Image (cartoon, rainbow, N blue to C red; front, side):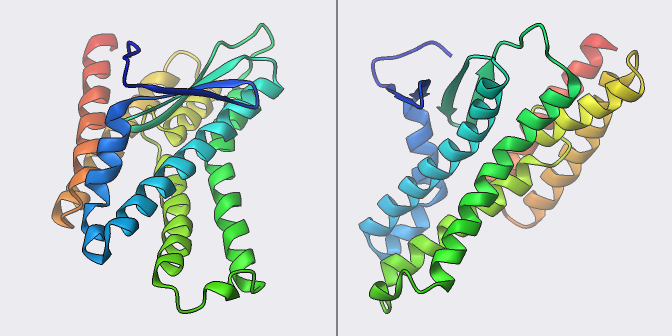
Length: 220
């Protein structure tokens, strides 16, 4: 994606981060119902989505950097991307570890928030509806986003892990296997989400189903 004047750019731990304007719009659309509680709840939702997806991508990026692959992060309308150039010592195991590091970072953040709540750290906010909303949504988003990403659908983390496992079993047919698994899973999730009136998930997985179908047609 080409940079625009509306992008937010900064660096964390030496890793370049770019956030495009569509990211903020998508976050607002996804959480717009929270405005019924007050505009501060919608702002809190957008902040939670931003921090959660950034932490997820930082997990990938920091693991890649630990292996010596300089990373960069992009947050856009479909979530986030941690991009890096593999080095000479790249392997399927390292690829799997980098893929797992994203959901792992989100799970750790959710666990940390849960432990802080259990320890009574947020007792000062007892009775505060906004704080309760922030805590509940922060745990929910990090768990939900991590689990969604572990589904075996390319280009999600789970899809990349599935591809690495399949190609390690059969280097010639592994990518094809992984793409077929991704297509079947994406269709199933999109159909379920459509039935459950989860529009964003239905659109997201419908788009990924189309991507994987196109890949099968083009390559195989």
